[in-house]
Length: 312
Image 1 (cartoon, rainbow, N blue to C red):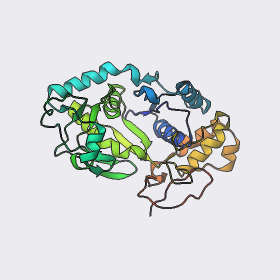
Image 2 (image 1 turned 120 degrees about the vertical axis):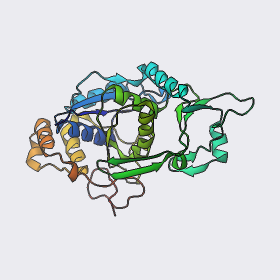
Image 3 (image 1 turned 90 degrees about the vertical axis):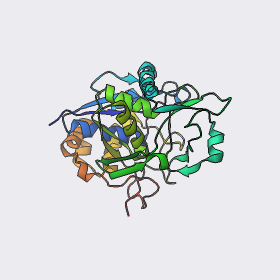
Image 4 (image 1 turned 60 degrees about the vertical axis):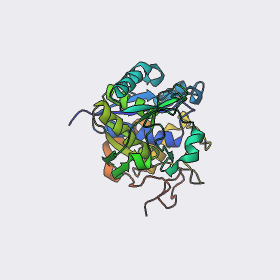
């Protein structure tokens, strides 16, 4: 079996909740069931989103669940030199350009895309007279990205039409998530990314950057998104409850059931170590629910755990 290196990359905006654990458990089991390595990377690029004490809380929670990472934890806030080097490579080849537009200006002139306004290319041919660059954008003209997701199937995206020229260096001096993700996955030797389907639309942008920078391709698997009773993705913004590490066995069993890997009752009773062994031995991608849990899916929850939408 070929080498497998997976990762879990939470944003430290608060403690882990059920939705976070779906991504953590899914990425962990997909790696461990294939004798692979599992890494942890902290997505702390954006200082205002980092909640005090959240990094320690996340790492303690993973350890309480018996999820041990196989290399030192990487913090993206310490990787700015690598991102700057990547940006300079793109600049040297005229693959990016400076943009003077504010969010309001873009919103006033852009059409709606799959993730908000599609940048209309205002500064693509050069900065307007008297304006200075606020951010840097990647050129996407004529670029269509197609990849085979290991769960969701074939995904295609016309970057220029669906997203527009996207930002890799923000007006507030922060490197964008997509650039950091592409650079760090390559640097860490990540071969497989297992994460929530709320990031499915982001993947073509990361693949585009991998292609431009000559970085290795990655296999992707996007898991269903856990939702609350109102059909909203579980998150800090929707007031998702923090996972209690003291209930690790119960929560792990609920996460496995959410992913259509419900363990037998006797396995649940035997504790967390037995539960993990059963999960590793029985993890099958083909058993995972073939549904993203995104708004296009419809259905209803049939368990007591947070819901996912069922495919029609």
